[in-house]
Image (tube, rainbow, N blue to C red; front, side, top):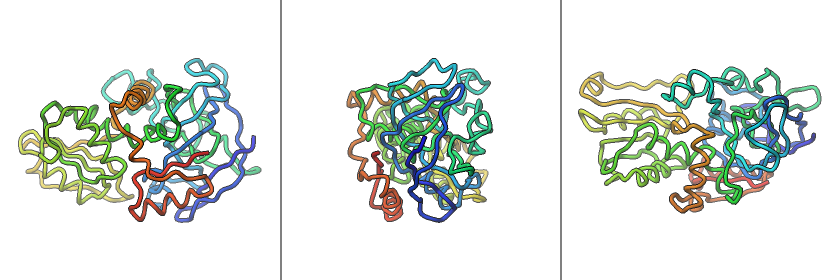
Length: 329
């Protein structure tokens, strides 16, 4: 089928809006009509060429929401008409990582996902005979996409697509870093470095966890991707028990460093991906939190764009004029 997509033709260039071909879902896969997608710094990170795993040409986007329109053989957890959020961190519930309950980093399709391909080693997107790579198993910068069944979370059908798409990355990552990774307890104090699309959701997570003061130092969170700030965040955490969580992604080849004394004296340096959330299990709960008014999303959706204007969303990001821009199809 023909679909409309914003294609990253090569690193450093603006996305190009074009018609591409999309094959239907194969065994264990679902076809989703994407209704809305957020523009995240991770998309910009890859588009810029700083991502060592970046592949081109590709259809980026990983913060989406939509409707299942077809399913492949063997799919049982979702059906046509279900509202879903794509998951760049899938949850198979069967691999050693999932069964361990110690991490959310499912390994079931990681190898092919990193190669820009579906689990069978092929791409569903193409232009003529030329294939186009998928992006971390999602590719939500297309109005239709194919995903693995284990990479979609079924959610409340009453929730608005243009708001809950943000839960596909930014909201879950920020809140999850507090609740799942740092395990902030009631009455704790915290510092958040970087109040953008992730950092503001870290604050929401701290509020949910019952932190007394956002400005202390029991827990610190880096949401900038700046390695110097990561060090500052660690060293700002409390001697003896402080935990510092790195959430931001740094450029290829960059390293973090600190004096061993900072760790010997009891601080913990931690990292988190997708806020430690287990996608199919936790994402529907976060959608319900939004619908129940426990968390806010609407104030952080600062711009709503058409697909043709998607590059404007990246400009707004670079200029610091947006928290989150959302493309509505």
